[in-house]
Image: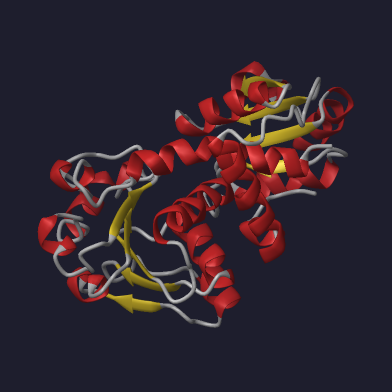
Length: 294
């Protein structure tokens, strides 16, 4: 099984992953599911949480992760993705790819004979959305009917979050400037069932979950000045949080630029579950690996 999009997993698959992750987090499940298994981790983008959580996950499951940035591989000298995938498949039991173009992970999966997991592309971040859903369930219980509000740039994290939320009956509202709304990729898959606002305060009304991310994602650095102007009014702060429900949780996939997309008082406040969310990357990825790697 390849996991290139969150939609490569069925609702039942995701429920099984979340249930196993919870048992792992509680310490009730300690089996070495991947004893003596090896995965190759190809990372073209920088990483803190994804890299560390996958490496620790493999070790705790009894396996081993080999970290490879593009310059470590012959990919950096022009070897094809096709040839790289075919060779690595002879050595390892799975391939984890964190890259820019989504087509890269698709091509890796096309030629690999072992499972390929998308650890982030410009289009989707399925591993993050698993941890997000786990966190929401952990703090909110029943998922159906919850209102999740995304404030800011509709990016790869938002794409996967929208798709996984649609499977579980979570209502999505987006507060974003004009020209930064949902992509055709998302709208085609959901038939447009997203509420979109150019006013962040209207979007945040009665929210159960407020979620934000950086205004300048990796690869958009040349747009930094423009984006900081465009998103200036779309900051998650106490004023915006006051429009949500009193028990709303605040989420951020990290890294955060404090004082830009989110203020420190909200990030460190009583509504924040941001660091629980970061921890949950480990538990959900352990469960994902246990399901996917054979």
